Image (cartoon, rainbow, N blue to C red; front, side, top):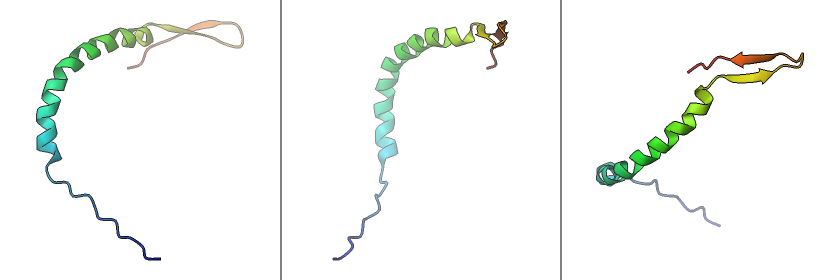
Length: 63
């Protein structure tokens, strides 16, 4: 049985063709960025952890 030689994929010009496509999709993506900002707020809020000894400590948010 002969081993088939896999041809390497030639990267012709996907970058110039994808850049104009990304420009229109950037506008719909903007609302999705605003929907992600409220999700980023809960982790920014001070979180508390209950330790085995029963003390509740606040974890400072480190960006």
